[in-house]
Length: 221
Image 1: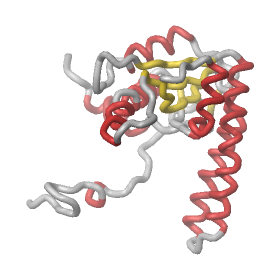
Image 2 (image 1 turned 90 degrees about the vertical axis):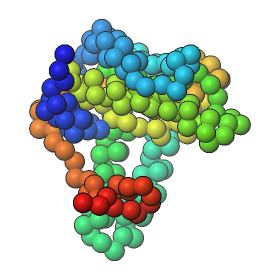
Image 3 (image 1 turned 180 degrees about the vertical axis):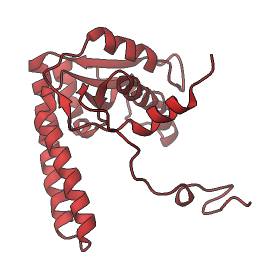
Image 4 (image 1 turned 120 degrees about the horizontal axis):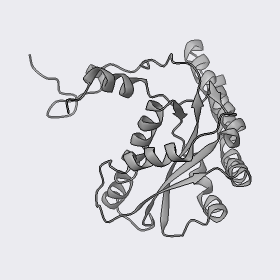
């Protein structure tokens, strides 16, 4: 079946980390989450023998407990970044940083209000692993997180890539019964989004970030 390139480009360029315009009161159908996870499991992996795990948290008490772990790290981090913004000489850059800090705080404040939190994890511990081993480990789970965000977006569900809970990974593991030899990689809050005005974000140009056949080299012609 031919791929609709325009629709694909639209999905890829408008899947944002959604922190606002979320409907915390509208339930998320578990069957939709399972459908999205099934698709996300088709993402590339370094080894098909390495099980990946999607811990879906909908229980209010557990969501709150995970959110409290998240906030223990997030609030001090935001205070540090606010101090950096206050020392910034460029007012425009400082305003941009403060705007994003405000969004991050709003997400932390509301984390347990999301109908679902999804933690993606993978079999294998990180301790003692080489850079190459870690690349293979995370390379088998992080693509699944992006695929999951895309499939959720296509079904009217917003999510946001966040990893601050990893600084409290043992506490989170205790709350959820995650074994010691399973590595958590990313947490996605999930809720229905409102509106349909997502658009491509402002990014550095391709020319500033592409290198041909060597660092800093440009394509001829």
